[in-house]
Image (cartoon, rainbow, N blue to C red; front, side, top):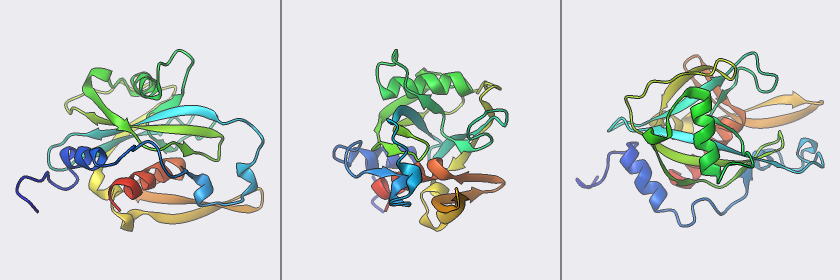
Length: 210
C-alpha cells in the first residue's frame, strides 16, 4: 500500500472510495427485488413511500465502525430488528439528508453537528413498500447517545471491516404466504443483521469495495 494512502477500512479510505464514484446516488436499481425477481410481494399495487436512513460511519482512525440500532420490541412493524437510524421523509424535510439527520437525532440523540454528510447511495426499494435513500455520514467519536425508548432498544457499533467482507454476507430465506423470500443475513456476535439493512450494506459493498 502506498504510504500516502489511507488505512483500509478507515473513515478516510471510506471517504476516498465514495468520492471516486461518479454520480454515486444514481445507477443500478437496487432493492429486495434483485434477490426475489417476480415475487408477488413486490407487486402490491401501492405507491412506494419515501424514506431515508443514515449510514453512520464512526471515525475511529484506523478502523471505522458503523453505528446500528435495534428497533424496540414494542413496535408494531419490524420490532426487534437491527436497522440504520432513519424513517419516513416528512413534507417538512428539505431533503433525504435532512430527514436522515432528523430521524437519527429523534431516535438515538446523535446531534447533526457530529455528523458530516458526504453523499448518498442509490435508493433501495424494500419489499415492505418503501423507497429508501441511504445517506452516508462520517461521525465524530466521543458522542453520548440518548435512546428514544419508544423506537429503539439499543445502539451498537460494528467494524466496517466486518461489514465489507463478503465472507460475512450469508444468503437466507423465510416463507411468505407459502412462497420463499430471499435476503442477506450478516450475524455479528449476538446481533442478527438481515433483511433490508443487510441489503443496503450489501449495496454499499458492491458499490465501494467489490
